[in-house]
Amino acid sequence: MKAAVCHEFGKPLSVEEVLLEAPQEGEVKVRVKATAICHSDIHCIRGELGGPVPGIPGHETAGYVEEVGKGVTSVRVGDPVLVTTVTSGCGQCYYCKIGLPHLCERHKPRPFHHRTMSGQPLGAMAGPVGGLAEYTVVSEKQLAVIPPDFPMDRASLISCGVLTGYGAVFNRAHVQPLSSVVVMGTGGVGLNAIQAAALAGAKPVIAVDILDSKLEMARTFGATHFVNSKTVADPIKAVKEMTAGRGADYVFITVGSAAAVKQGVFMSAPRGMTVIIGLVPMKEQVCFGSFDLIGGERVLTGCGGGSARLSIDIPRIVDLYQAGQLKLDELITGHYKLKDVNEAIESTEKGQALRNIIMFD
Ligand SMILES: [Zn+2]
Ligand SMILES: [Zn+2]
Image 1 (cartoon, rainbow, N blue to C red):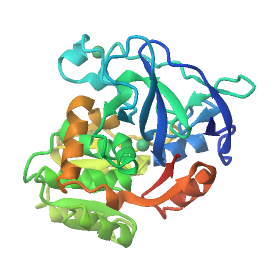
Image 2: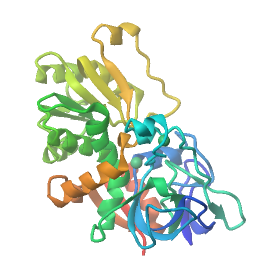
Image 3: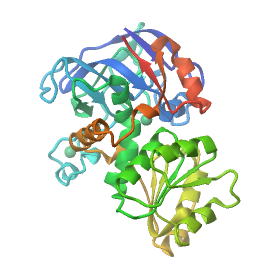
Image 4: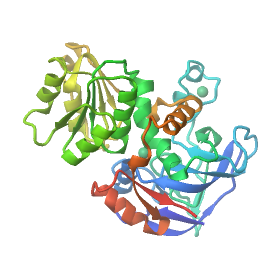
């Protein structure tokens, strides 16, 4: 089987033959059909998030169950599935019992089963998926079954970008109707946070980005107000002017930079919540004075994998798409073959693409 391997940070991926061990207890082998390129993959390939090298990136993945290991009960061979970076949890621990399975206390990193042809172990980069490979072996807890007629390229988008933006709004922030929302960064995840905020009934939904063309796209996803943070003199002031001088009730930061996080918090209203979604490179630190948070009782938090409950959120997202209330088609820029993976990554890096999708035969 073929996979795209990162042998050295910052270098193009090498598409090569690799080996894959059989699924163990609780694991499932998936025949990958589609994997979208996400910015987290690019951060990993550049070495900004650490992570194992050599390794296989790719984590926005959909495919078919090929083989199940011992004790697997939730999926059967042939099922169409999303492979996500979250876990559906053990069902027994404290966090599972209170309905937060993504924080499952018994969840531990699973051994990764890809090897180079010489037997060297390969790691999974940007989530325990290894989606830029013809086959992968993952935990059954990472999977969500989707309807058989659901298009696989659209499905791959759900497993990270869509779930992350949607989940940050509905699961982490619990955005209230008629509350004000800012979304910084209108790439794939940002547009999903925007469409989720619009679905939640937020008003205004303020899109912040540095490109007018991206802000125009945000409009089609439900943004009502726009701030070009490059051309406007003071983006914080601009947001305040759109929110009766208070700032926004919720701010979602999809841009992976410490400066954006800081700016986002200052865009939030007293008692407002700022949610970090974009992965900030590890070498960057966000600094605040305590009074920045004490005075207005502002909340700064993070959201991983959309704080997802796979069994609840995935069917809802699938339903919303099928009912025409949630956009997926518009997120797709191009389809590529695995051999052209570096081209797909390069166009994403240059900001030319929302999502480029690697399609497997
Ligand atoms: Zn992602
Ligand atoms: Zn648990």
